[in-house]
Length: 199
Image (cartoon, rainbow, N blue to C red; front, side):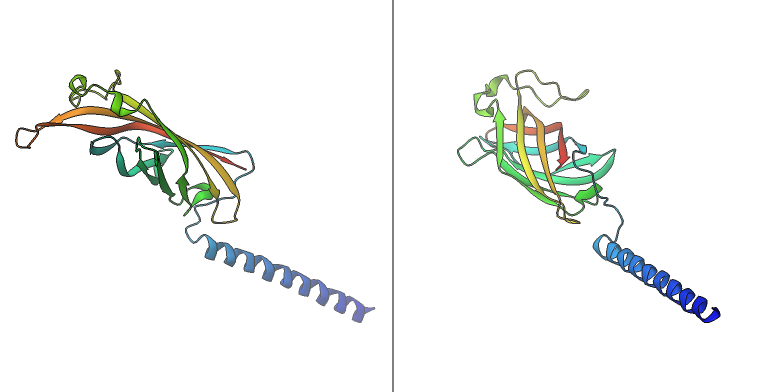
């Protein structure tokens, strides 16, 4: 009877040790997969909204080529995006990258379906305002809205997500007495959102 109890106890301890070994292995795998511990598995249907921050794009002609537009999540830097808002048949489009944020840490995305409305080519250059020196820019017939659809997979577990991008672009007239030609159109991202839905 005593021998039976010893064998039973040994089997129990062996099973516990095996279970711990599996747990430790899973924990080690998680640390390798996500060394900063920033991402987390998001449930299907979860929606997360990132805030696009104001960003100066510089001069433009018939398009906006704006690289490095930052976006935040709850005030914490969460990534950056590039918009090429061409008014021709090849655009507008762009791409972006998520930092260590939720389930998207390290994820890249490409914008393949997008629109820019109204086209900046419809604006009257002479009526464009100068850059506002007091307060935030106020759109008064001189703004376009860039909207796009993106989709991709999460790097940690290969889950799917879809997102909607909406960015407001403010156009103003920048003039310099030391520049040939005097004035030119300048584009400024005033803000926007990237709303991600996990599928």
